[in-house]
Amino acid sequence: MDKKIKMRAEGVNFFYGRTQALKNVDILIHANQVTALIGPSGCGKSTFIRLFNRMNELVPDTSLSGNIYLDDLEINSAQIDPVEIRKRVGMVFQKPNPFPKSIFDNISYGLRVNGVRDANSIEERVEASLKKAAIWDEVKNRLNDSALKLSGGQQQRLCIARCLAVDTEVILFDEPCASLDPISTAKIEELILELKKDYTIVIVTHNMQQAARVSDYTGFFLLGELIEFGKTQDIFTAPQDKRTEAYITGRFG
Amino acid sequence: MKEKLYKLIFMVLAFASLIFLLGIVFILFKESLPIFSKVNIGKFIFGRFWYPTYSPPEFGILPLILASAWVTFGAILVCVPLGVGSALYLNELAGPRQRAILKPLVELLASVPSVVFGFFGMVIVTPFLQKIFNLPTGLTAFNASLVLGVMATPTVCSIAEDALNYVPKSFREASFALGADRWQTLIQVVIPAAGSGISTAIILGMSRAIGETMTVLMVAGGAAVIPHTFLEPVRPMTAAIAAEMGEAPVGSSHYHALFAIALILFLVTFIFNIIAEIVSRRFRIKLGLSG
Ligand SMILES: Nc1ncnc2c1ncn2[C@@H]1O[C@H](COP(=O)(O)OP(=O)(O)OP(=O)(O)O)[C@@H](O)[C@H]1O
Ligand SMILES: [Mg+2]
Image (tube, rainbow over all chains, first blue to last red; front, side):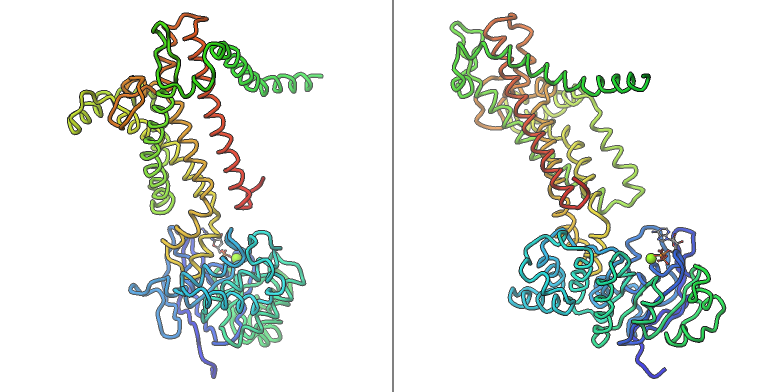
């Protein structure tokens, strides 16, 4: 591989209680590329993507083996604070989840917990991230309104802006368009392509066309295993595994 | 036909409590109005002397109102930190197993009869207070505040914990995903989101403390005098009604005055409960839970 590797999973197994949700997964996440994770419902995509920012620790009674690296840092080693990892690896969730605060505060909150104190620079960065997330024009006159008054698509773009504001290196998207209409979806896809310049992106999606449109690499999961991983083009035109082929041509799942 | 009958039966049952409420209000008004032909309402509420059995009697309930206010305020100082603190512990720090044991235990505390709390206050708190503050009697506003505060704690804890629980997991996840730590998430996301739910808990705890009778009858000391410190015996409104109703001749001014106190108590708790209801409804709307 010629490109730089931003994140890497090696021999990852994950359990909810005694149920194994991931089996021996290895993957390379290329820097400044979009990596799509696809697969039928319940195959472990969300579980997997949430390992990259140590989100699964919030779920009680789980266990993990194997290694996950951010650059050359093993993110699960004992001396690493998950908070530090999450400052570098952001996440946008399937369901838009703005805080019950104003639009402005939704974004300034992330800045403040990341140590930005100066009111002017907070204001600037709120504006910049709203612009980056292509929602500035829709909200610039109502920054003090509750974020919960926005439409679903606007809320999701606000959540993206919130994530952009804190200057992460990687952004994880877990089905960011699942609850959105086609226009909002198109906006977010456009945005993802735009963000690739500055960020490394991992996106879970159920939508084959979306994976084909936005991603450079694709991984296909089935029952907790990563069945096939490679350049999106190759996966979609010449899958090596029968199961991958069956899935992307819509013959099951 | 049969269906109509069932519908009727359930409707009657459903309206029964409304009818009881209206009946109580009606009787409270009817039995308390006569006193106001003898004492004007301002003098009744702000009068400094409660000598209902002297001749001529004095019907000023300010000492009783202040006693209720002091005792309730003191109880708040006890039950808010205890109740909200334990709710935060249960919700944020205790693991699911610990929580599964502790929460029912806290709620069990709410089912201890108030006379047991009163008894506890009399035999344990009273001598203790008397000793450390060197008082003539340990039966004081302070004592009543402590015991009432402990009594109201389960109410506050349980409702506050529910409020914290209602805060969607997605808010916490969003906060953690931004690189916030547990403390920041709690203080800046979870507590503000649960804020009006927690206020509801506090208001209901207050209304529990204000309306409590048996305990204050047993430990507040019973002196119908305007209190100057927490370490004096007092007679809250509920205690006055319970202690005096038996000896007030039916139809006497004293009798009507006690009803008037009950009416005021009723209105105060009624207002508290309405405020609690409004606040909690706003909370649900704020979290997008429903109207
Ligand atoms: N909190 C949890 N506790 C126990 N089991 C869980 C939990 N979350 C997920 N699982 C299980 O782990 C497996 C993988 O779930 P996961 O959510 O990762 O799938 P997914 O590929 O994201 O599915 P979807 O496409 O429906 O979002 C499923 O069998 C699921 O039931
Ligand atoms: Mg999922």
